[in-house]
Amino acid sequence: MQFVVPMIILVAAFGSLGGDPQVSASGQLFYLQNAGFIWVPLFCYFQHWHGLA
Image (cartoon, rainbow, N blue to C red; front, side, top):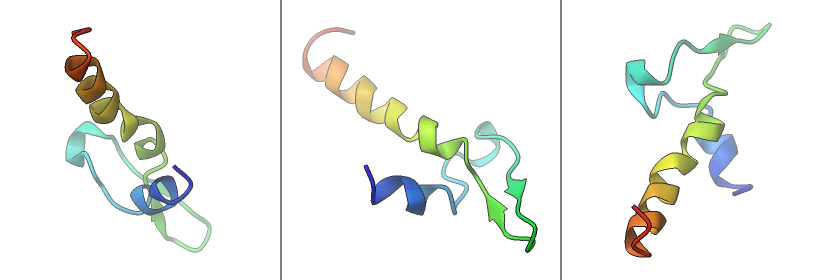
């Protein structure tokens, strides 16, 4: 988790579904919403694997 989140906020992992990026004072784009969204596919996979969905 500590390795995935810093990497995933630098890219538009979900395209237009993820929303607009935040702009830092230096002009770099950050996709902070990806830090939460990146876990949704993983949770769905495990729920399906355990027969919960």
